[in-house]
Each structure stands twice: as structure tokens, then as C-alpha cells.
Image (cartoon, rainbow, N blue to C red; front, side):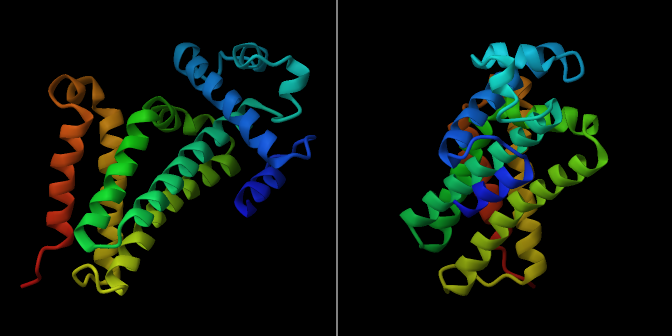
Length: 215
């Protein structure tokens, strides 16, 4: 709840109920993503976003103040989904390779479900004012940080082969980028692999990187 409260403070709202804000903003985000993809960020109006989300324009402004707010919330929605999925994966098992495989699986499934959201962020980040662009990039690092923490936790518990901090960080970035690759290359990959095939093959690759013995 603390993170959602911080987010509400960051993007002001007139609504006092945090859960309602979270739910309504997700409606706005999902509607806006489709419009941004179809029309482009600059050509989409807040009135069009309100209509697609089922809001009046006045109601929309109770939850966000601008299109830039919405684009930033797209990034936050991705982060929240990844955070939830990884937490659930780690709660199911703590056994080394199996735990990491579960983390990878949950993340890749988030990327599969939210591929339009992720593609939009990469296409439109430059449309944001500098301070917002910086925050979006910080959010990307936060997502990679989830994998850093998960890997470090497994190593510290003795349930995973030892890796130093630099190796952990590089493997975490590999996980992050390979998840996004399903989004960027889906025009090709989806014709040749199911998401389950992709998860299996990439998991084997990542586990090979993270468990390789040093010379």
C-alpha cells in the first residue's frame, strides 16, 4: 500500500480511496494504450482517452492531469505487474534453479500480456518532458532491480550457485531484455514459437548463464 500511496502523492488526485484510484487509473491506462498505438501519443486527446475508458472528461481529470501522467502510469502498471508476478513466483518455491525458472516464467508472461504497454513505453518515452522521461528510465532500473534482489536472495540462502554482484546484475539485465524481446520481435517470434516455447528456451539459456562455473 505504501508504494501506491507514494504514487498518488506523485500524481495528484482528488479521490481519497487508494484502491479506487488504482482501479480507475488502470482503466484509463488500458484505454489509452490502444489509442496511443492507433493514433500516436501526440494526436490522442484526453477527451478521446476519457471516452474510451468510459469516463466523462471531468471524471478523468480527477485521476490524472495530462497525457504525460497517463504515459507514466503505463510504466508503473508494468512495474506493478512484474513485482506481483515475481513475488508470487518466489512464494511458490525457494529451490535454486526452480525458483529462478518460476521468476523468469512469471516475468515473461507479464511481458506477453502487456506487450502493447511495453512497446508503447519504448516508442513514446521521448515524448515525455525531461523530468518524466527520467522517472520512466528509473522505473526500468527498478524492474531490473527486482531480478537483482531475487537472484541475491537465492544466492544468500544457499539455494543457488554463488555469483558475485556484477554477475548478478548482468544476469538480471539479461532477464529484463529477453522478456522485452518477445515484445519487440513478436512479429517474427510468434509465428515460430508459442510463449511457452519461448519461456522454455530462454529459461534454459538464462540458467546456463547464471550457473556457469568460473575457470
